[in-house]
Length: 444
Image (cartoon, rainbow, N blue to C red; front, side, top):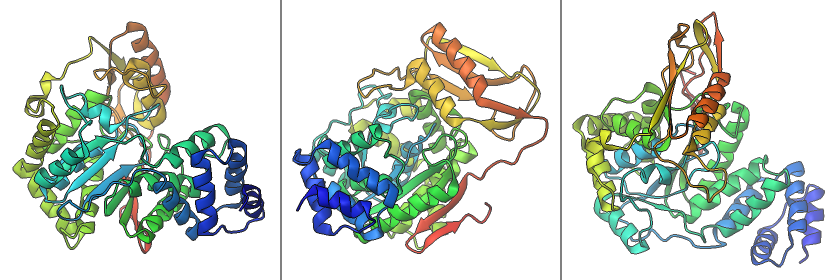
């Protein structure tokens, strides 16, 4: 078998076999297939696409290229969720404890933030002492005993994906649905959970800017998961503005704690509950999302979900007192209020630009080795469709450097668009995808 022939076959629109895909993934991972040949193949995929069977086989081959986490010792049906990336997206901090308090084992591998999007691991490290560097034995023990554990992704999790993505990033081959879907799902399959719920973001702060493309990606990933024997759902959620009111690591942790206390912004609570509902249904803890929703609201009202967060933080070495006394989180030394420049309605917010504001303040990474400041970030007081008066507080920035605060203020103002008329606000949730396809939200 020759890589040349596989490039030629895909260039002519042919479908590769399982053996051919295994050959190219294995050969590239081991270094036997050079970058320039894989680059040519990836471009051919971008131009000619892949069918469902090919995409599934590519995903399975990448998942099997490294460590495959064995969760067979976990009691019950383990579940996981994954977001395609957004700004202010702290749902894992809410959904994990909430679902675990309902008796569903949540065994999660999470990543760090890079660029304008945040990472769950960074946010959790806002708790003094918290560590995701726990052994596999301790990870499984925590899930069995308290139904929740979150660790960082292992270096050898889907190594083929790491190599292929690095190549896609510099060869203009990122924007291909088969390649995006196989990249995301290879890591989810390798992580071992039997139920996977995907949060596919749509809008200015997301990779997929338009709904049709996001639906196509979601449907592809759900089909891959189901073909691989994992119960998979995808929720299509809005990212035309940050989720919730805060962006920045410790600020988002505090907002997540508020959510578990029943005091979250509506958009954040809506998305978190829907993701949790799908996890309960997939793990057979509820017969319908309506039944799941009732269970989850009872757990929130009783305080059990918040107690689960505290237990989880303590189990992984963190100071759980911060869950009940969030004022203990260290604050940035400076704050800068951003007044509204005009009277009217908020007609647009570039979510990606808001994420970059946090990055400028030191709350994000420009490289994987960048050191971040967990204290910095911003709080938004005005979001899409809300009325505002000139000079009224639009947002407040928290930083450790005065020049960075000023730069972030200018960027934030440029990210806002105002109108004299009340605008149409996009729905928080567009719909969901299951094995039968896309189901639009009734209110959408």
